[in-house]
Structure formats: structure tokens, C-alpha cells
Length: 100
Image (tube, rainbow, N blue to C red; front, side, top):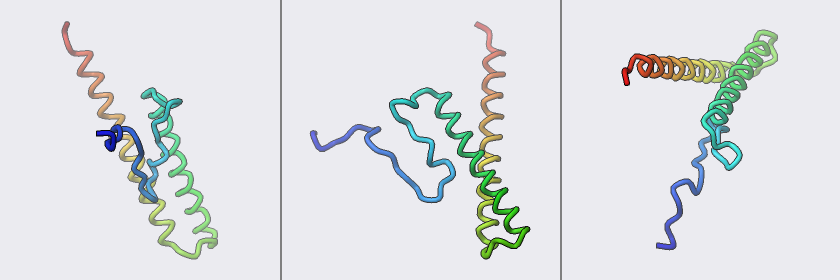
């Protein structure tokens, strides 16, 4: 069985994924660090979309499809963030209702 590697032996990388930069490493093992990294990536995605939109309005973008794609990535990232936040709040509220 020496040919079988551990479960966490490598990361699957997907190109053009706004959430890809969130990696687990020895320095980033806590949930808070992973969450912070995810939120920073979402922020970067939103800022890139905003910058492309401003450039498109100024006529500096040759391909409007890039602006549309960046805008949609930003929208999906924000929707996912809001959904995760809502689910976390629901879970917290449910735990507060539990009687021990």
C-alpha cells in the first residue's frame, strides 16, 4: 500500500475559479483563516469586475464579454457569500433554541 497517498496530499486546481486561492496549509488551518481568505477572494473578484466596468464605460475595453463574465463571477460570488452567511445565522439561531 505504499503507492497510496494521503487524502490531503494535493489540491485540485481549476482555472478561472474566483474561490481557488483559498488553500489549506500548515499556516492556514483554522476556520477563521480559511473564511478570511475566501472573503478576500470575493472582495478581489468584486473589485476586478468594478474596474472592468469603469474601463468599459471609458471605452478602454475591447471585448465586452470580459466585462460581462467578470460581472457574473462577482454576482455569483456575492450570492454564495450571502447564502453561506444566512445558513450560518440559521444554524446559530437553531443552536440557541436548543435546551440542554
